[in-house]
Image 1 (cartoon, helix red, strand yellow):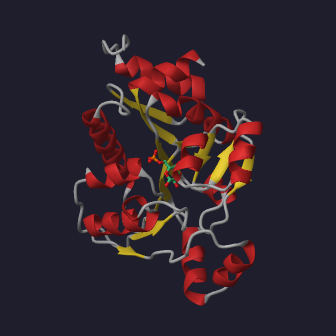
Image 2: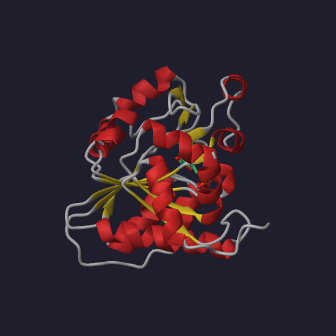
Length: 254
Ligand code: BG6
């Protein structure tokens, strides 16, 4: 580990913003994959940025994952805002309870004194089953609200790691391997040029929705996510990235 004699972080932020062509980039010191305190710092930084964007009437969407869980855990409470709604961005992605979008959305809503709605969708439904659920009145209502998200905070993962963590079926694993898929976010898998190659059976935010969201904050760090961040930024660059030094340095080498 030779690289952590912290250079100028703001210099890294500028270089990364230019390379990825993003709205804004924030880099925390260190390597969040190997240092739990650096990971907490990432969460704190992401929470701070998120709080800056939360205003009256915000419809706030959040994904699952350990990074989002850490972000919400480190967020300060902010009460007194009016008409806030918190929603999970997507339901049923075969994650453990603690890091499911539903759980995280409920925790987030509590810190904001906000209303929240959850997506109660069992995992691994087939297309037909999903369609039935989509037409359910309550679920449909949440899906309509999801289209109104105006602030999204999302995690981004390494395709292989995410498929393994979610115990995806063989077909998905094979495709990730054979087509060299790199990035994953809310159930979609991307190749290195940012093309969408797999869509997990799930409901919630779609990539078309995503593109229209005014404020999106992606939080992803650690060198194993470097390529994923790079690939996803080619799909869409209208978001703010919060990352760490390890990922930033690696991305600049790509
Ligand atoms: C998932 C999100 O739950 O977490 C994905 O839906 C994201 O968008 C993933 O890729 C990242 O997980 P982690 O644990 O690396 O933050």
